[in-house]
Image (cartoon, rainbow, N blue to C red):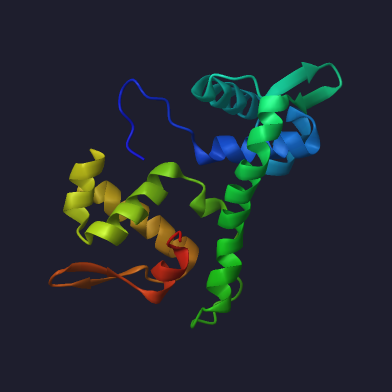
Length: 175
């Protein structure tokens, strides 16, 4: 997901917030569930609506109800969020270390991190990924470190030919 200056990109956290507001019917309850401020949830919903150029919720004094557009988008957004939230359990099932249960999927809810992972999976070279995404090689390494910490596994092994996906990376890679 490369972002050009004139494009609006949908952020995974926006989808997560959208799903939670739709489920709970209010920004305040969604904010409580997600340990975020109401203003952060409201801003994310507003930005998502701007990116899609549609209104996703009818706003009422008693809460928020998805519009027809919101109802149309909701199943796919939920599926994307559910897929990400299932990854820790999938990794735990195939995990060789015994360091206890993996944390929640919060480490996966970052569009840039996931873009780096996918590019690195295909390109196998951190510097090339950095150039393609317009970031520095240390930024690629930092993102990979966060992902590997969340997965509690190495996702790539370093070789003279570049980095190669590990079995844990194969589990994470979208099919």
